[in-house]
Image (cartoon, rainbow, N blue to C red; front, side):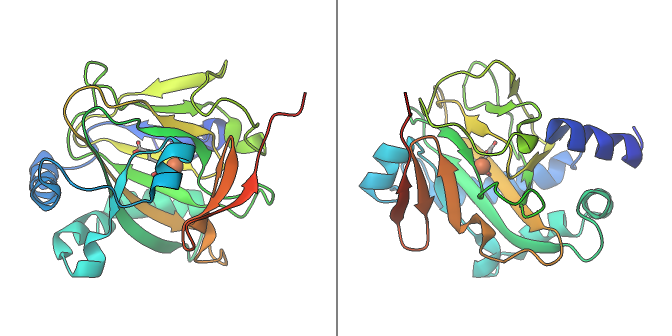
Length: 237
Ligand SMILES: O=C(O)CCC(=O)C(=O)O
Ligand SMILES: [Fe+2]
């Protein structure tokens, strides 16, 4: 597929899945670094209130801030840069590279939007890299409601309920998933083994750098920098 087709698919669906995008040897190298960093039983990083209320059990790590420059290879990938140019427009900016680790038997991530959807043009782009396979058997698939980046606010309700137009993604080692930050998405519970994904978040030019500080869940808006619930969300009957 040429870039034009990919870009229009992205803007139609709010996501794009490209398998075998990255070199398997690079994936093995990064996966090794990540798994050595976390070990078998890492401690949670978020506080108890967040873990319980958000139904999100993921431990973030920002390797580039620790000078681990092997992760720069993804930023330097020419195809990813061109695709990002085509989706985000000129002078888009990188936010950060965040590794997300989830232990076996944890909840995954409840439905959320990475940032507030009130201004449709103010959004982040998740550029997700999978250094090892996700599988139906092990759980941890990424679920997204097709076209929901155009539907505004995620409705209040069951943090783990079902939506009619949800699509289950099963990325493999080397897959790239591009996912609009306003899209309604979640990660299914991790049944077997641990789960790793790495997100090279980026934004269009002029977007506030702290755009992903407030995340929208079905039961609350949560500010990560102060670890606080800034809005309770309840179903109006
Ligand atoms: O790990 C994934 O597949 C998705 C994670 C996610 O929701 C995010 O990075 O915003
Ligand atoms: Fe997300």
